[in-house]
Image (cartoon, rainbow, N blue to C red; front, side, top):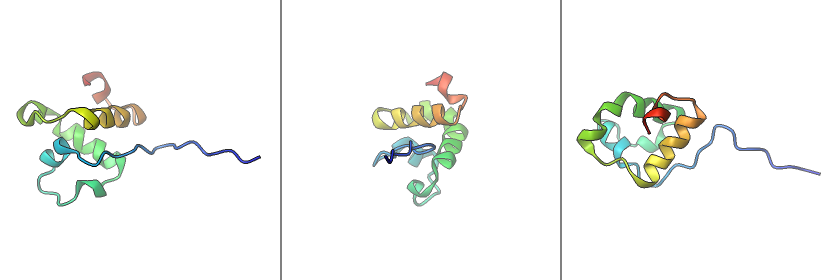
Length: 78
């Protein structure tokens, strides 16, 4: 009997990530980053969340999943 493998280290990426696009304005395609690279960018750009004020909805849920998966300090900030 075959069982499905759990999806470890995979998180569904939303179609739009406006905050990530804002903090990575020099990057042509932020969707090419791995989930770990995305989390790293979120951590480095976290201080700009009040300036851009566009972290909400699917993106914030996505970030919570990344933070939980990689045990990031951002989890306490969310």
